[in-house]
Length: 297
Image 1 (tube, rainbow, N blue to C red):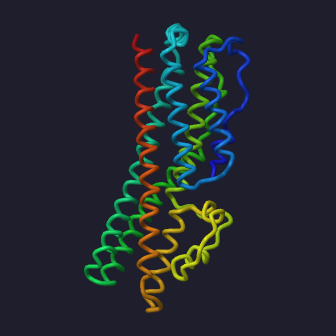
Image 2 (image 1 turned 180 degrees about the horizontal axis):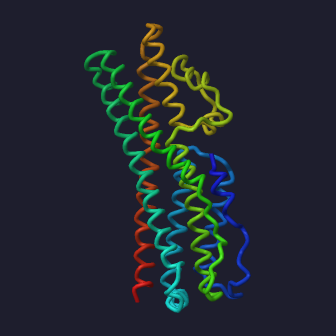
Image 3 (image 1 turned 180 degrees about the vertical axis):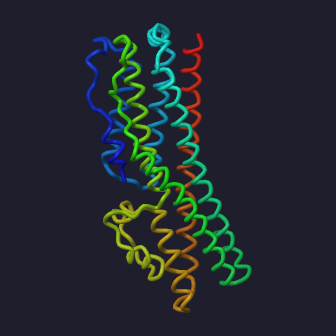
């Protein structure tokens, strides 16, 4: 799902203060912003869609890094080095790094729990009782991750990221560039919120819990369109909970092949997201270094 609360704070109008001959880097940055906003408004939160959006976000921050290396930007900032906006930009860069790191760690915990579960399913040592215990351990890890992730989501929803806030005492040229950076921050936060909603396993608005469970228990084939609309981790968690519930009443035996396929596919999806976040994290560090270099000269 797209982050409606954060994306609503993103302003879509271009500043009239931009020069009539914008540098190609500025044009590229604005085009990337526009593209990501459109992607966010599609509302699709499948792992493949989120991975694609993260790649776009990495490209956006590459444009930011190039922007910060432009002499006209460095000159504009150097003339306005004193002011609250300096701390604001530095705080924003740390905020984004912290959000990215938190998302990576949450995915890592989930993936490691899934890998332990998958290993137990492959070797089948200890029988189904051992597998019961491993599934319960996975669900315990997921509850811990969900609890922490939902706190982050609430924090993001409670903070307004306004890209058009007033910048008193700043000349027009510097204000334009700072405004662009604030728009990038708001857009990045909006996408992070979508990632955190996926990690939390937020229930899709149109999904059926029974259809999710029956995919494992009845080997039902789910259409591609229906599959796209489902949060993969929500589906995985629901299936695991259902299996534990049914097993406790001796209703079923584990459908090992189908359960194993689901775990494998979810694990691969998480790895793709981790890779996207890792690339973005490295890019965010480069942007922060470039910003610090400007402010220290």
